[in-house]
Image (cartoon, rainbow, N blue to C red):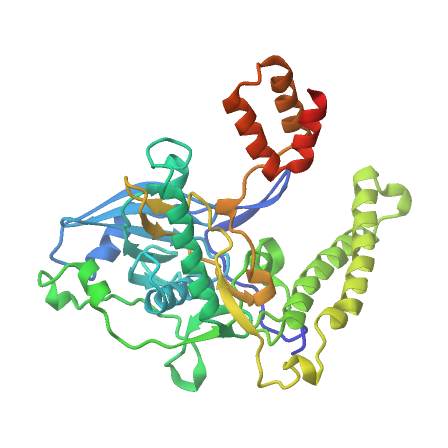
Length: 415
């Protein structure tokens, strides 16, 4: 697979989205606000006899979330900026469907969606069930969850991640529903109400979604990843998958960075050296240095990812194994009830099928702020010198010594 393959032709339509230069780089901005009345009318189109209430809830980097009350049921509608038009929402829906049918992870169920901005709201959207519980971030450090519940929760999450690892996919990219349209093309119209409006009143929307037994099949297709659509990357002419191997995937990622560097150099090429200010000179130096590193990385990639017969990826028909990798498994995307039981794992947008080596890591949930070990040693050392060495205190520091023997040795010397 050549990274020069054309996958983006012409200008990608991104109505309502503007990229704004900030201190730390580009940030997306809404230039058009979704209208609550348009959301109501959209939901009303497949629940004409229901009472609809819509209220703004919150927003993230690419989405605005609204509470949608349909009669006595409350749902969430997430309206998305067109950062990767048609692909981001379609892939997220396919991923959530796959998770539901393959694992026991509690995640929202999709009621309806539209992966084209050609609709009354004017943006792509997903209507989904609202999950119970509170963000783990709100209760993890408090005493509202018994301490003995925390290990159980961690084990449950680990077991679910292990389930994803057991259900490996082929190729690197994002899940997409296998197209049923002629000639393998994907339809722009993907609104998918889970129940017929004529059956309104016979079952709740949530029940209809839960009981939906329609068959689905998925393929690993074009990748939907922030690096591939951030800012002007969506317009770059690079191959976007599915990738046969880690090498192909990394080459495309390097191509994006290479194009950025070339654009920087071209921007300043028309200027005389004397006309460059210090910031311009720094940009040119950084871009030139980065291009050299990129070339070195490209030259050594075959050493780490050989395309020999031993690797198993030499034939075009053989794709490298991959795993769905949720790279934002943080305490804000995990919901628990009052007893600390897992009730939901949220935010399945841009969840890609990545190589096995890239998918084996500690989730953000288990990572804390960096700890200065020398500061800990000094603090406990001072404590040792000030406090009397009672039996409980000795026991505590001996336990600490089993975990950090070198630090405990330091404490002992300080005594």
